Length: 336
Image 1 (cartoon, rainbow, N blue to C red):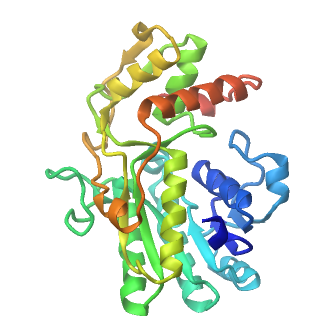
Image 2 (cartoon, rainbow, N blue to C red):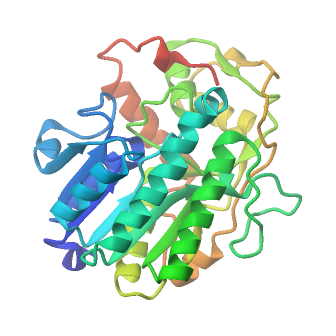
Image 3 (cartoon, one colour):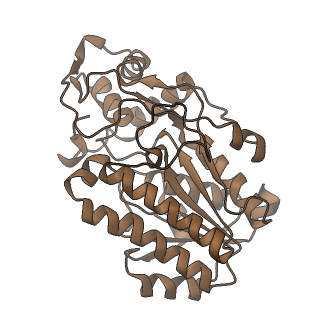
């Protein structure tokens, strides 16, 4: 892997985000020339150090601004692009669907069109989600079997981005593939509206953790470093034009209910599970979502290396060591 990536110029949109920061750090470690595009600079809470950021050539850019984005890609001429920049919070999408569609759908078609116009780009990886499949009676989701049927704002935005990416692959021969992950968790997730970081912070501080649903909603949970490895493997094969136009589910194939993962988190943190409260007021959310990842395991030669106990242990220790030396903002203390 290091031999392939060494000295390659790689561009990451959303490099200051949770997954983007992990991917950027890994690429720096294997001697890539990393270019980043984000709407913020030096985001608090992710894993990038000052030294890491000094090794990234960063640009401030809203991905819905197509001309500015195109100018950056033309100037930098990256060989590989990881498109991770997006509005990724389900609650925010529900509150502001237009902003979400501009960020996720328009931002993606701008990346695709810029890539089509720039022959230096040999591979484009599009970050998607299990949400792109929408509600389905048949589970787990399987690529090319389960239709893309997003109904709610975030889900629909992901269905649309996948369809547009597939259009570019099939119509223009663009060397692009799509990665659909379950709920990614791990150190450096600054969005406290997500279940894992919020529950960990509550468990470590003795606060009541409030489950928005009835606790029976089922989801995939996958450790962030396993996702990074899947992305790196996919980009390498795509660069060699072996997986053009393909979509991949990334999952450990062990779905859990919200109540179950919350209890695991509290036990990992040695916290009192009686401080878990079920609100049962969730709206516009799918009850069960999980993925079949056999295609990724076969074609990418990928498999997860971190089980849920190991992953939650690493994550809890990071929050214990790294986040409690600063006061969490009101926005970060979102309810789950």
